[in-house]
Image (tube, rainbow, N blue to C red; front, side, top):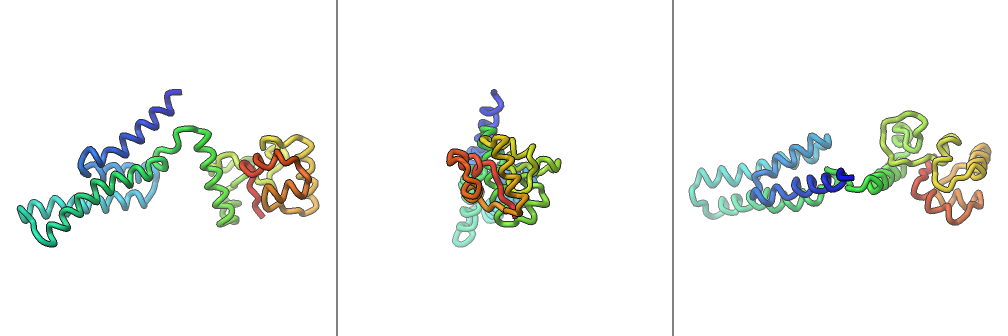
Length: 206
């Protein structure tokens, strides 16, 4: 049970590091996050923050008391890495450390997987979205493809009784393709109370 607060505390300490170090830690915090999450955007952010800090330090050491455009570049380099890095870190903290609650994490994974299925259904099928029976490694948060998953998987959807599963399978045998939870409910005259679960856990790939 103490895993949740530890994760939240680590995320907060990571995000506040740029602020308390006046930006010196910013390139390192984003570099670490980039490699942990395999995110080139975070790695690129680390490089840009390092360049900002380098501009601040090099101009200050080279010119003593800078003036004019050099003073502006120096101040900009400091504030980009310091305050900009702090705001950026807090903005991506949940993405780096994940939601504190595992149920919330699963919900977000389902949301992202549904968005992928809408945007690129072919790739979603290749990744096995909604098909835990295929033994795929892609984590979709527990989605079930109502158009292709076998009966044993359909039964895992909350509210899907054996009778409802049979009705879904019978409709699919008539080449019916469901497009949404509402469509499935209307076509099969399912209870209205089941729509929330079908919307939350169902995905409807063509």
